[in-house]
Length: 413
Ligand code: ADP
Ligand code: ASP
Ligand code: MG
Image (tube, rainbow, N blue to C red; front, side, top):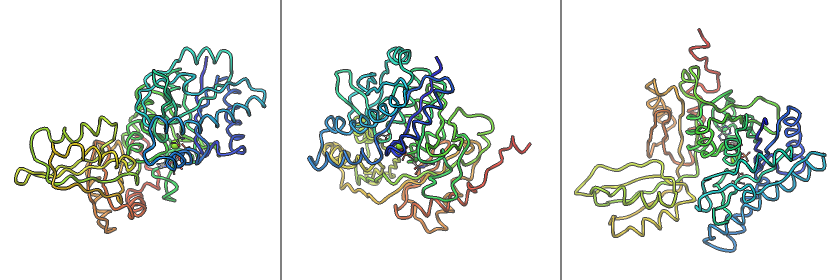
């Protein structure tokens, strides 16, 4: 059985007209002889609406109930689209996360997939040509509804593709693929034909929401080829795959930014072995992603700890710091919401120097102050004032010549 997975994001299922375009894509897959798994997001704006609704009822919505509420967005999409398929005479069935089931852990609002019943899906595919599955949602082993974090339908799509050994997982969205930077921010952004899993991981973790990071982790782990493309055009899209020689020759693939971060500084904690563990272990236990961490040099047996967390997790992080107050004994704790991360990403950086200094130079010329720096083998990130994000992204995109197709060494020979 040849299986194709197609995932459609919120803008692709926003209304009837959009869903008709989705129908065309699904029919094409059927004409090519595939059994189809179609994974849908909630209709555009619906998840935000449901989150807002919950917050008008409660200042601290219970996470388990929040998941129950927001998961309904996807339920509506799959019901509506399956009706369209049936009206078109296509044999189709709708499935929620709980019906598949997609089993997850019980970290509500950011659950992780533990298992997908692939045998059940395959046997359903013997009976139906198209299975329309709700993205973003799962169920704990004791039957509670969970969701996979914002953008989690991407992860549903790739995880389902991995589970049933699909030939390809197509991610349909409102842009034509993965670009050198957000095309909605920089008009000279260029679509990439292909990108490595590692680069895409950096793009996703540094804020390029075109793919959720967990989806890329799944794709890399199970070697699922992922094609990011537009629901609204026939452009060929971007293939996310293993690295090849040609890709290594490209120094910088793109610029990512993330305005959803905040910076926390804990001043004057006692500088003793285990202090970092005392702070970051309870934060990690709550599955809060700490990204940039800087510890100052010690003065009089005390030090300062600065780090970034997603803005949505600020309140919970501050509560955790409060709860360990006697243990770490800080002089004060401060946070800054008006920060953004800007990152330069490329596998070619592994073997080349000078990218960091060029990045710092570009920011200096624009008079943008750097608040924190972090690096990996294939990425350099600077934390800056949020109001300079667009300026920084455009200046870096320009300075690294990303609007022009870089000829790799192999192509030139
Ligand atoms: P969907 O609802 O289809 O899941 P998302 O809004 O989650 O779509 O992701 C698509 C958006 O990601 C684009 O509209 C674009 O603004 C943004 N984006 C950020 N960085 C990039 C990038 N490097 N390439 C493509 N899109 C990007
Ligand atoms: N509907 C969810 C969200 O808006 C999941 C998704 O679209 O991928 O985050
Ligand atoms: Mg998305």
